[in-house]
Length: 75
Image (cartoon, rainbow, N blue to C red):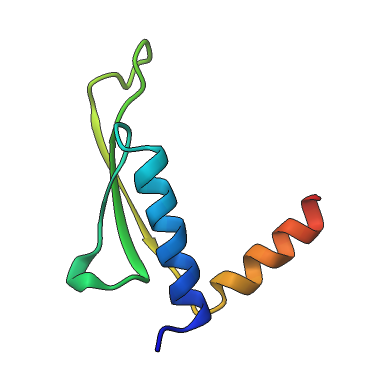
């Protein structure tokens, strides 16, 4: 059974892949839902146009609780 955090990450990943198909590619080393490598190209019309970038995200078990706190604070 997936944890609450894993379910939320899976949902966020699916939304990102659906919404930003042309902009981002997400890889998960060892199929670990808590570890994403997001690849993208620099924005057109900027100094970074055509450059390739990768960002690494490692999510903690507190991912869902942190999101809730952020939403409460900013809404």
